[in-house]
Amino acid sequence: MNPEIAESGINAPLLRVAISVLRSGLIPQATGKLCRLNEDGTVKGMCCLGVLTHVAIAFGGLKITEDIAWDGQTRIYRSNSAEEGFLLPEVMALYGFTSRDVILQHDSGEGLMESRSASGLNDALVPHPVIADAFERTFLPQDVKA
Image 1 (cartoon, rainbow, N blue to C red):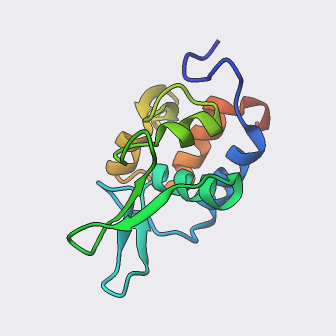
Image 2: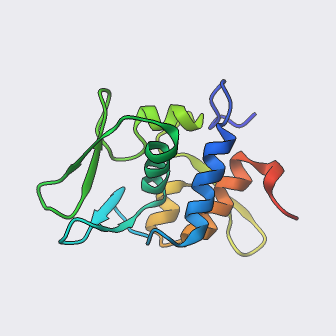
């Protein structure tokens, strides 16, 4: 059994939405923060965990406080239990993860699989569609096309 999956199991429908958004290219990639903003307050980009947070709020019905950081360039997500950094505990639980920065099975491109954190892949500038593949391979192996 995958130790990254909670006893309740993965919320496959919600994760499929997040994977689709990561693959779509609709949200540009950002590093170091869940969500970076333009000067006018519009989204400049999100890390992969920011995309999962956004999907959990938009499609999962979570009530999370969203604020603008003091620098005006970062969106901060808050809940009763924690502030951002990685996935909030409520977001983690909604997806069925046991970690705030899940470990993914990533194809290194040399025919070898490696285990890397989602944020580590994102901040190494692995493109969102490739990270989407890693989420699918790790948590929804039945969806992986041969």
